[in-house]
Amino acid sequence: MFTGIVQELMAVKAIEHGPDLSRLALQMGALGHGLQLGASVAVNGTCLTVTQHDDDVTYFDIIKETLETTNLGRLDTSSKVNVERSFKVGDEVGGHVVSGHVSTTAELVGLHDQGNDRVLTFKVEPKWQNYIFHKGYVALDGASLTVSSVDRDNADFSVSLIPETIERTTLGTLGLGDSVNVEIDSQTQAIVDTVERVLAERYENHTGKV
Image (tube, rainbow, N blue to C red; front, top):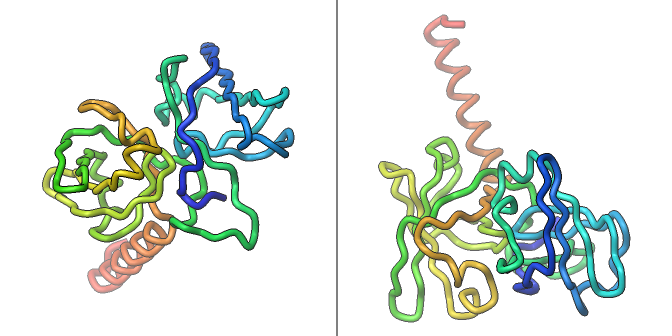
């Protein structure tokens, strides 16, 4: 589990893309101290398992499904990624609890500065839009953010970035058309799914439909 507070914006040291598996290498530096084989690390919000750790270089295997459902399949040695190690019981949760299981990707369709904030607008598939609410939580490339506005007609939503987030995460380097990994807040998803199921059951009982 993670907190959605990105610990470091890190350059990709090496990546080898295969047809069904890619191997990613990151030079973790101080952030890698104490890492063991099998440990979990969030890379752009995707929970990856440490498969090798030599000195300060850490390796991860990325399977086909992950490559197809996240933006990790587009990485190359010019890329930078958001990195967060899993939190320990008792650590401060500065963002919100994030599992590292990416729900979908979203395309950046709007970008403008508003005072000290930078407002980013993303488009997602309508089914995921149902779980995104004004002032609710969402994790983008592993960064915990508060949704600043939602437009359900256009199936998009916006977040506002402070200068710290712009400087320390991948979100500050995005251009129009780029995609980010999205993890929907699990509690919000559970509530929405439960309410929809209860309403559907009541409708079926009332109408006699099965």
